[in-house]
Image (cartoon, rainbow, N blue to C red):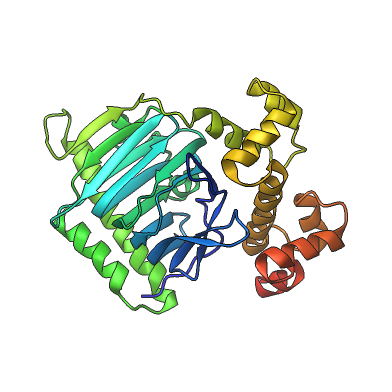
Length: 337
């Protein structure tokens, strides 16, 4: 099965630590690259899943081999986040809360995490590490379409921010995911197959949530995470930038919030992330405009330029084409009803 992305990956972010990269992007459904340097670096290879289903569910993952040891920092929105690892070890964090999942010998490991608001997301890559995983993001919009809310359903254990529910996926779930990764389906069938798998996973998870009223079951575990990690300050900076993309960003306020001068903030941001703050903001605004055009919310070039904070449409068109290899006008025609 060939699975292509429906838009730019929502897992874009900056990379911190000893190895610095800035932003990542899924390419041709087979690679994740670092876009922050002059020469693109391949970070992950394999068969990648990167889908937004008609119901609003987001799916990420696949069977991949990591090409370097890096730490990627992005941002996750309000959601119920469900991650299943079939093979390999996965380390990630939401804000200050660290998680580890390991699948081996045919036994998968899964966790559902409640995110009540936007939060920095950290993902650790390890050179030559093979991982087979599926990450499901249930957004508030999806719950609305189902006629319920995040605080409804048998989710009492997941009412607090960062509450986590662990379980062991059934053999049927593991088999369905494995088949999904290897099936060669027509494009129109991919969404149906993905929806079926998500439904199967949710049925098992909700059944376990209802049945297990204590923590005695070895296959399930509920935790409230409070482990600190040293990316908090960096996450706050990225969080601020993401929240203010549609506004005029005040770097002086941002620097003040981090107890730094503006020049110090600029210098540290460039040293840590490999790109300037201005470059990061410009790239993310263009990506938001791209998503708006594809969804039909933006249908004229002038509006697109305004949303991306360009004073002149010609400059916007040039930047857009340089980034996406297509003009905004051409893209609008492509997605016009």
